Amino acid sequence: MGRGVMDHHELEEGKQLALDFTKLRKVVAQCTEDVIPAIAQDVDSGEVLIVGYVNKLALETAFREKMATFWSTSRNELWIKGKTSGDFLSLVEVRVNCEQNSVLYRVKLAGKGACHTKRADGQTRHGCYYRRINPDEKTLEFSDGQQ
Image (tube, rainbow, N blue to C red; front, side):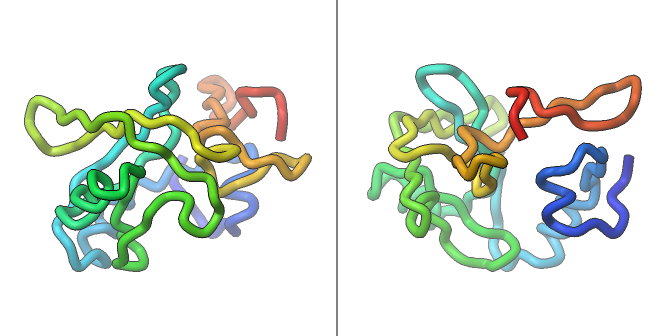
């Protein structure tokens, strides 16, 4: 179940389960900012679209721009979702959890989708959670029937 050597295409499009249990360790090692998790949820459907991280600047920018904004922990820079792709997530509201260590962006899609990956037909995926785990075989299956 751990992640071995795998290229990006296989990781994002394949059926092999390779969960990255080292992600938070990498965030601590690579990120120069204090961050908390930020979940983007489609306000209409309730679907979780994306999970990222925010620092104070990203949260302030999200409120000012009225768009889901994250802090890229790998690039150590502000990331306004959709700035390059055009697939913005318009901010409806921001909620905070009980322990105040994560935020929930309730958003409306202002583009074709939220994920940076595309289906086999070239269409942007609605959200990043497009595969489900088959617990018996420890493999991944496309949840929408499309690759």
